[in-house]
Image (cartoon, rainbow, N blue to C red; front, side, top):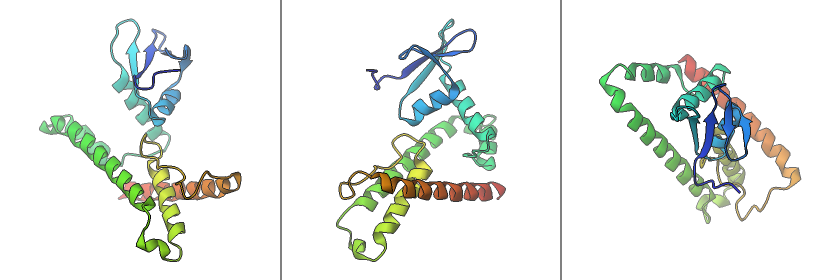
Length: 190
């Protein structure tokens, strides 16, 4: 079994093929993105020179998702990032982005805790449980691609999901994703 505490070592050959040293097979950028989404740290090194290429490949993954219409970063944020490379802000931007994502991760975690905290005086309100599940599904759809942000799954009160429950949750999740994509398009136009 692989040691998931250590970064997954990917070696890039001269042919630009990427080799997973744990499974002894070749991988694609999408495979690497999947490892990262699953919460695994990845390190990509050039076989010949030993140079760390991780940053270059992570940026390439983001760029490919953006080019496919999966707009995560609004135009104004991308513009500001480009500007930051030519100003004194260059040294501040990485720390600011890291702190912002950490705050977002902590806020999402606290929100999920608050949603699942019982007893909750609002829990007796008609429709509260449906609203809580919808908010939880929204947060999973919104943050699901980021390790540690995808929600906690069924609570002890709910138990494991049954096969009959999976289809409605999947449809709700798909609807929330569509609504989120529409909102992102509107924000991009602003």
